[in-house]
Amino acid sequence: MSMGWPALLAVMALVVLSGCASAGHAMLGPARPAIAPEQVRVYHVPPRRYETIARVHATSAVGFGTQGQTDATIERLAREAAKLGANGVLLMGVNTMGSPVGVGVGGSSWGHHGGVSIGAGIPTAQQRVEGIAIHVVEE
Image 1 (cartoon, rainbow, N blue to C red):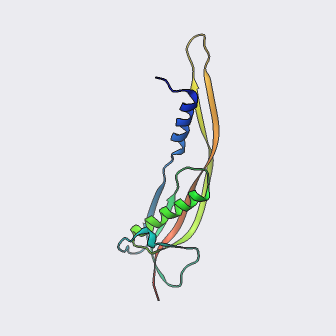
Image 2: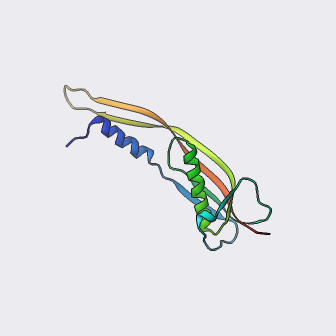
Image 3: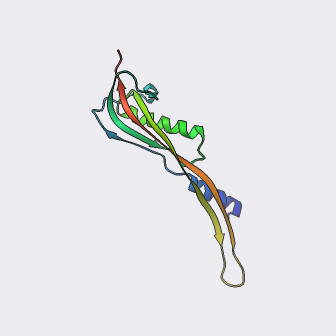
């Protein structure tokens, strides 16, 4: 059973676009017991009193640079902070890294017959979000 060219091209495009998302941290202070990610608040301006726990970062899967992709990456950042017991993340930056991804299908045969080649450049983007995992001290 053979796969037609359009189906093969679609499968290859999905494989290329399924880039890995990740998250990580570098400790700057003591961790606390883990909390639910829903309890982590994202701050754009530092709160009045807080303790620093770690630098955190998250990257998205390869996508098309949408707001939904950014939101999902910030949620991934909050999940990483929650693992460290942080009840807040001080957002330090959101960066979009983009590049065209080439997708191609080709074929050829030995002898009298020629080959077929199909290619396309698909503009994609990956988000990287960085922040500081913090424990906000209530007054």
